[in-house]
Image (tube, rainbow over all chains, first blue to last red; front, side, top):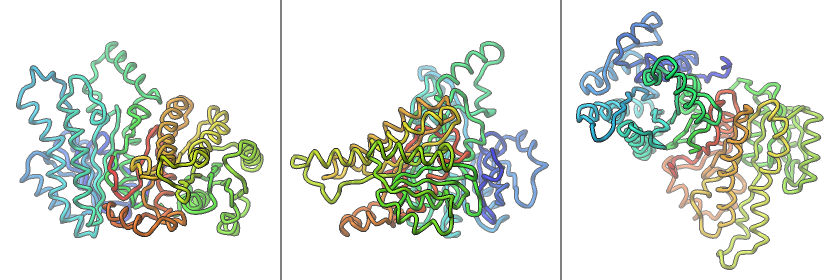
Amino acid sequence: MKPEASLDFTGRKFMVTGGANGIGWATIIRFLSGGASVACLDNNAAALEAIASKAGERLLPIHVDVTDTVALNAAVEKAAETFGGLDGVVNAAGVDLQAGVETMEDAAWERLIAVNLTGPMKVCRAAIAHLRQAGGGTIVNLSSGAGLRPIENRSAYSASKAGLQMFSKALALELSGNGIRVNVVCPGAVDTPLFRSGIPGGEEGEKELQSIRARYALARIAEPDEIAAGVAWLSSPESSYVTGVILAIDGGRTFH
Amino acid sequence: MTGTRRFSDKTVVVTGGGAGIGLAIARRFLGEGARVAVLDINAGDARAALAEEYGSRLLAVDGDCTEHETSFAFHNRTVDIHGPVDILINNVGQSGRERSAPFHESDEAVWRFVLEVSLLSAMRMSRLVAPAMRERGGRIVNMSSDAAFAGDAGLVDYASAKMGVVGFTRALARELASFSVTVNAVAPGAIRTRAHDSVPAEVIERIISNTPAGFAGEPDDVAATVAFLASEEARFITGQTLLIDGGRWMI
C-alpha cells in the first residue's frame, strides 16, 4: 500500500500484544511509520529476537505472556514509564486450537480462553488507568470471523473470539465517559504465522488454501497490513465517533 | 489525517452533497485532492461553500437524484468533465420525518418518496457507474442509518429503506468483488446537521442520553469514515456496514 496513506501518530504511545509478528507487527510498523512510540509485548522469544535489531527509542520489545498477571502488569507499567504514558492499546495476541468437544482436554481449553479472552481483559485492566490519565485513548481488540460465524472443530477459538467481541462492547460502555473508545476488528484468514501453522504442507495444503480463498468474495486471503490499516484507523482521531463496533476486514466473507 | 492527498487523480461523485453530511464528504475529498461532482436538489449551497476554494475540481449540479434522466445526464457530464467515476458516495436520503405518521395511517406516496430518495437513488447511480468500475475498479460507499437498527416508531419507511441499503450493499459487494470494487455502507447515529436540527429537542435528548459518547457527532466524523472506506487502505473491507454512532448500538 501507499506509504503516504499512513496516519499521523506523532507523539502517540501505543502498546501492542502479540506484536512481534503477523497482524501485531504489521500494526506496529504502521504506528512507527506514523511517528508513534510502541511497546511490543509478546511471549514468542524467537519472534522478539527477529525484531530486536529494530528496538530503540520508539520501539520497546517486552517478553511477556498475557496470562501471567504479575509479569503482564509489570510490562504495562514499564511501557507507560518508558514512554511517559499510554494513548492506545491493541490486543493482537492469540492462539488457535483445533479440537473436537468430545475429546477436549481441560488444559487446552483453558489455555486458549486464558490467552484469547482473559488475556485482553488483563491487558485492558492494567492499561485503563494510563489511558484515563492521558485524557482518553483507544483500545482495539483483534477478534476473528470465527467470532461471527463458527468454524468446525474450533469451538474454543470461536467462543473466545465471540466472547472478546462482547467484552469489548461492554468495556466500550464502561469507558465511554472517559473518552476511551473500544472497537473490534474481525479478520478472516490472514497470511500470518498463526494461519500458516494450521495449513499442512505440500499438495494437500495447496488444495486447502484454494478452498479457503474461494470462501472470500475477493477470492484471496488478507495480508497482515490490510488488517493493520483498519486497526490503525480505529486507533486514530479519524474514527473519533466510532466506538463499540465490530469491523470485519475479510474480503467479503461474513458480510457482517 | 490532515495534509494528505489520498485522492489526487480520483473522480468522486457525492449525491446529496449540497448540505450536511454530504457537503462534509465533498469537502473532505476535495481537501484530499479529488475531483468531485455533486448532484443535489440544491447544489448551490455546495457551490457557495466550496467553489471559491476548489475551483474547477468541483462540479455542482442541481438536480433530483430520483429522476433517471437527471442522474443519467449528471453522470455523463461528470465523466466528460472529470473522467470516469472512481468513487461513488450514495449519500442522498430523506427520512420523511416531517410527514411521518402512525403506520396504519401512513401515506403510500410518502413511502415511495422515502424509498426513492434513500434506496433507489443509490441503486440507480450505482448502476450508472458500475460498467466503468467493472473495467477499472472502484469504491462505492452507501449511506445507511442507525434508524435501520433502531426501528423508530413512525419511520417505518425510512427504516425499511436504510435496512434496504444494507442488503443492497452486501449483494452488490459480492457481485463486484472480483472486479476490484468494494461496496460498503456507513450508518450514522446522531450527527449535527440541519436535518438533525429539525428533530424535536426531546427526541435529540433521548438519543444522546442513549449514546455512550454523550454527544452528537459532526458531519466530519462521517466524512472521515467514508474517506477511509473509499481509500486504498480499506481495499480488503467489503460488504460491511459501519456504525458511526458514538457507541449507541454496538451491533
